[in-house]
Amino acid sequence: MKIVISVLSLLTVLAVSQCYAGREIAVTTSSFKGGEEVDARYRNDGDNISPALAWENIPEGTKEIVVICDDPDAPYGTFTHWIVFNIPPVARGLKEGVSSSDIPDHEIKFGRNDFNGSGYDGPRPPWGVHRYYFKVYAVDTTLGLDSGASRKEVLDAMKGHVLAEGQVMGKATARPRRTGQ
Image (cartoon, rainbow, N blue to C red):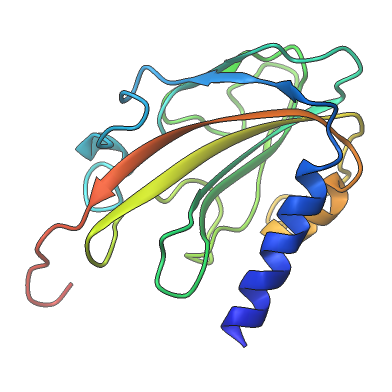
C-alpha cells in the first residue's frame, strides 16, 4: 500500500515537473550550506524552527509560490516535513521560523505534513544520512486550498500550473536516541 502511494506521489511530482517551461528558481538559505548538514536549530530533535529561504527568478505570470520540504530517503517513501502555500509572488523568501502572519496583508497557509501537523517539523532521520529538499514552485494560479491541505491536494492543484521551480538540499545524520524517545 505504501509503495503504491509512493509511486503515485512520484508520478504526480513528475507530472507537475514536466509542465514548467524549463525555468529554474534560484533557491538559497542562510540557515545552512546547501548540500551539507542541517544545523540543530532546524532539526526536529533540536529547536525545530523553519530555516530562512530566499529565491530569485520568479517568472512573470506567477500568482502564487509554494514551498515543500521532503525527505526522499525515509523508510516508507518520501516523507513531507513542510508545506507552505498562498505565498504572494512578490515575496522573495521566508524568514527563519516563519508564521502565517509574517507577510503583511497576506495570509500564507501551511499544509499538513507527514507528522500529521501543520507548519514545519524538521529533520530527524531514524538512521543513516537523509537528504531534505526545500523545493520552491512558481504557479500561474491561486491554489484555492485551505490550511491543512495534504501534499497530494497541493500537488494536484499545482498540476499543469508550474511555471518554474528550484530547490536547495540539506542533509541530516541520525543521532543516538535516548530511552523513551
